[in-house]
Length: 166
Image (tube, rainbow, N blue to C red; front, side, top):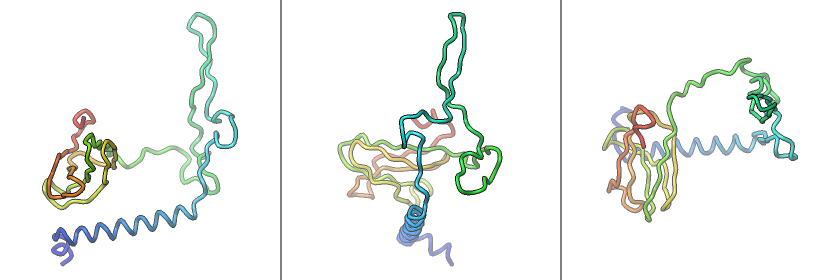
């Protein structure tokens, strides 16, 4: 069965590599057809149109500052009908995980399906560099030497609160 086949570490690595290749190909195809992104600062030195001058007075006379005022969500779409007329809360409720290699040797960062279980390579980090991924509480990650994946240098389990993960 498919479940028994996927229990093999070697098969799992192959499946992960195939999935990554498919995602990479889709990303490249999308990028070739995508409308180039732009910013209000690309064309000239004019300020972002969402920056508005705000005036206040604390008793010493009127003062002003520039503040970002989020435009109507429908203005974020160029050539398509907006899918919504109000901003929505994203369904993703995870967090971003950043892993910093503070050693003088390159390392591999893996996500573990369970502690000591099947692994998926997230990043190969050069010395004194950082990388990251989206994650959820209870996810387990390990660093291994770049040349010896069997040796675990450090293991991290994502906690429920950001302060648990420092």
